[in-house]
Image (cartoon, rainbow, N blue to C red; front, side):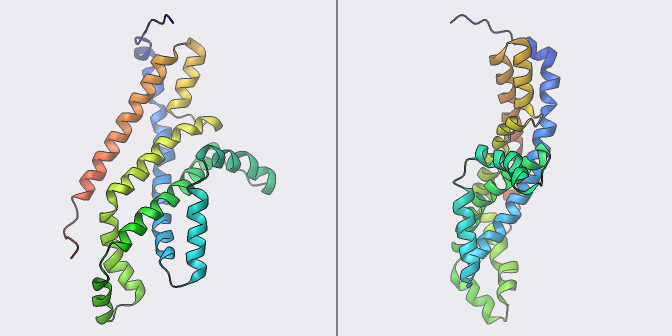
Length: 222
């Protein structure tokens, strides 16, 4: 196979390609927020005394972490409007799909962090008259959050990378624009390499921010 690389095309169309980062970020950022919040709720439910709450959390996690994101995305954007009459924009459909998948993964990360906290801390809080909600709010969740930050960062990075599959429903992020330019100029290796470099930069920057966040922890678990 004879193929001559012409990375000069990225000088001309790189700004257009990089413009897709705006859409990639504003699809992934809300998904990350929802993923984290819903993951905490599901983790707390999984440790509840109520069988109904534990069962709901278990079914949710097992369902949405096993469904491929592509299938979930197609069902939310194309099938749900047929069944319910409710339709979303491509960006909103992407946020919903990424959030459901990410929350199932984040739940397991938080659950591991919650279970790693020594029971003596809960007992000490109970002896001081703390309610179960107060123990969760002031004792276990702050520690679980920081202890799970490395694994939670991996979940967030997975969410960002999964934005690339939204090309299937025409979200104009980086990969969609790379595909669009490839069809016009037949330079797939250059444009997809450029898209990969942009995603690497985005994810590297996000990982750096999360590492700085880890340093905010001012205590160590006893």
